[in-house]
Length: 224
Image 1 (cartoon, rainbow, N blue to C red):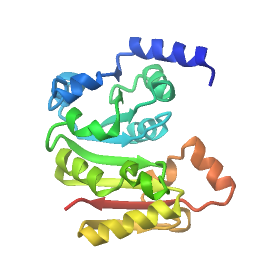
Image 2: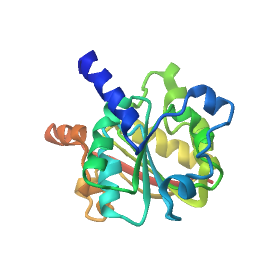
Image 3: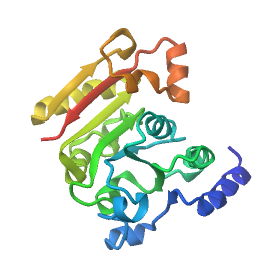
């Protein structure tokens, strides 16, 4: 994407009522006004909140919102030029239960209050295979603790990935730390019992992986 296109999308994001872009300083000082108030002040309802972390173009956020109008969905990514597409689609299709938030995932506990979130989706994250980059892996112990801080007691986390490494690493960590694995499969399209939202919503990159014959893995779990 050219720099002109990026700048145009950044400018458009600033005009979108469904895009929230807090400053890092605001979050680090714990001054973000929507923290603990998303339902009351932004969505203006009391419906469950579902997050998509590293949402990219927001395809899963949009897809899930169309499947369940009784929940609020928030796509989160630091790359605003990417989720511009999802935000624009949500406005064009009048999806009032969708928002996009531009922030780093490591600040997630500065954006949401304890017990404010019902469910988290992590779709096709960078597996960060090099050992030195494990701190950036979105299912490492540190991130799991941050998710636990904002999730309700029965809240679930979903990991969908084409990376066998990420799938295996996460399963091993979950079992090792005593978390509750609700469902796991190494090839969801070969398992008729896979949840429909896992099979029916496909991202742009997922379709490419499938064309190349790569299996898509999925884990659903609770953090204990």
